[in-house]
Amino acid sequence: MSDIWQKYNEIIKTIPQGVTLVAATKQRSIEEIREAYIAGIKIIGENYVQEALSKYEKIEGLQWHMIGHLQRNKVKDAIKIFDCIQSVDSVRLAKEINDQCQKVSRIMPILVQINIGEEESKHGLCPDNVYEIVHQIAKFPNLQIDGLMTMEPYFDDPEKARPYFVCMKHIFDDLKARNIPNINMKILSMGMSNSYQVAIEEGSNMVRIGTRLFGSRI
Image 1 (cartoon, rainbow, N blue to C red):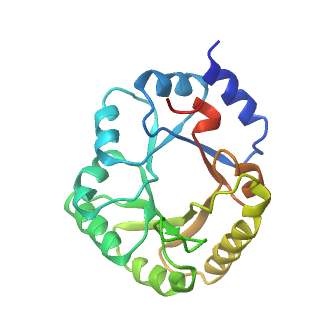
Image 2 (cartoon, rainbow, N blue to C red; image 1 turned 90 degrees about the vertical axis):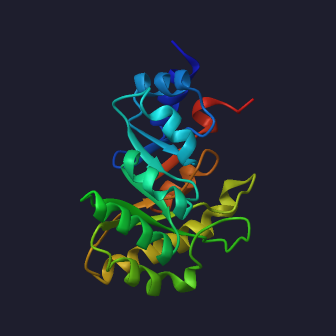
């Protein structure tokens, strides 16, 4: 019985039904990812296209989500492997994904990333611009907006992140109520290893967990 198996089962006990666990696998080995898959992980999240490409053909049976910043010049490769791009943070990026997907007759599920803490070090839409930009992205025929994603500000005390999660849920609910065509608004991806339980309490239905599952990277 591996440490990853044990940690997975500990995490699952704290996640309610209806909340999806994404294993954040940046800089994790093929062996670690296989162990997570055997334990029960169905979705992994990668931060870099090149790293994901190096792993993709070595592991079967998983869904792949892009959770890191996606450069436009990497989109052509990204759409070959990812089942969902969680980090769409501009109309220009959305257009490039749409254009590349049109070439291969593919509809790409995406999440729109919001920089809820308005931190300079993080990517994502400013909360004030969300509604206007989401309306523009929704017009692209080869994209399917399934919801929102955020990387909240980090705090040692996850309670301090709660107001940011509350704000995200408000934006999520507001967008959902507007019934914009081509927007499903079914996924709210927020909460990481130290904050996921607070995020779930505030309405997250998808959490991205790395360190708590795999341990600290060496």
